[in-house]
Image 1 (cartoon, rainbow, N blue to C red):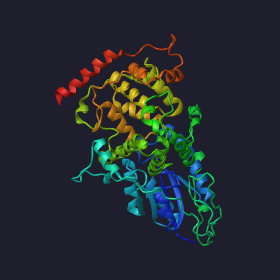
Image 2 (spheres, rainbow, N blue to C red):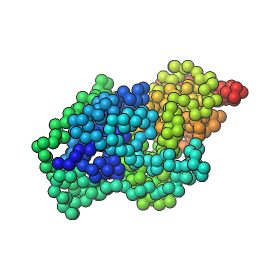
Image 3 (cartoon, helix red, strand yellow):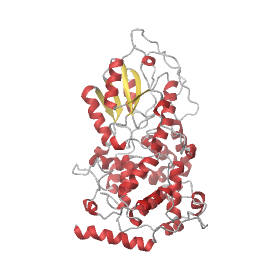
Image 4 (spheres, rainbow, N blue to C red):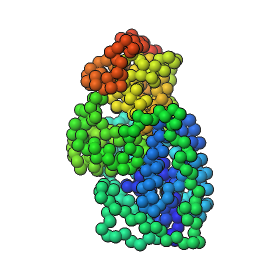
Length: 472
């Protein structure tokens, strides 16, 4: 029997276009493992909504591996320690994984590499962030020139097929397709020929997914998440559904009452589909019309470029002047914001959509974030942490980048003095139907008065901003 090779999975829960899986399969018998590591991330352990998604994504991935005769191993604990234990049990030291840029995953990779032969591969982004350089070899801090430079390296390599995961089984029938986009795909389920002298995968300990208690029970606040289909098949279906809308994307994405966005963000975060796959499918379907959407995929890459340079970007201002900003300790205002009870219908609709579905429309995210930071003067980090816990697509790089962009505190951000008017935004982007869906009491006496008037909030915010300008 061939030598076992460990495939360490994190935010790359797919079989198609998975370079680490392809490399591992080329060397021996693949043993995939997902480790629920709540220790290495510290206070950045996965939030509640993300854990709901993870449960269903792992269930789908386990089934997908089983179709190839491979068992997905689940372990809980510090990633470096659990990988070392698994390697010892298997009698191997070879581990393949996709490279990650979150600071805790960099720490984990360094720890694993101390005791095991860790081979890292690129594959979760259009291009590795540190390979997009200026003419003098420096790193970009502004998105637009970075995007221009990245496009010069595009298109990405074509997506990789799912490799043969049966190194000891008879060859496939030549008519069997490996194209994951073919709905008629047929895959071999032949069992491996097991050498009795080698420990089998089914003898290796694996946690039960149910025992991880990733799903809410008392109460079950995720009943509204039923419109999501986590997993690789769900990601492919979401992309297929979105492709016809690409020519209208640049317009429709700003209108919350129109289903004009891809809703691929959680699938991309968990790596259920690769950015390269998205690129090739969008470009093939819409050609030049795909540019506005692909630019958003590029924004995701750019966010990882930022945290690669500034690992603490989720907790520290990109602009030092904001360290002196006079944030308000407005606990009642913050709670009202989380509950969708601010008295501003579009803000409240977004916050209720978030709580109900684990997701919020992109335009409304900006408006809700701007309201918290500039109307209530609540530190952006409090909002970022709320999103971290309640979004199914909570992504460290994207979340930090988007909050700091809105707050004006980021290395590439909107000016603080650009303060969104929620009522005007609702009119401009025709959000009435969206608001009525999530705030049905908006026209009744049950709806609260605004926490603060827009004009007063604007003047107060600008006064606060002047204090840090005067001191810098």
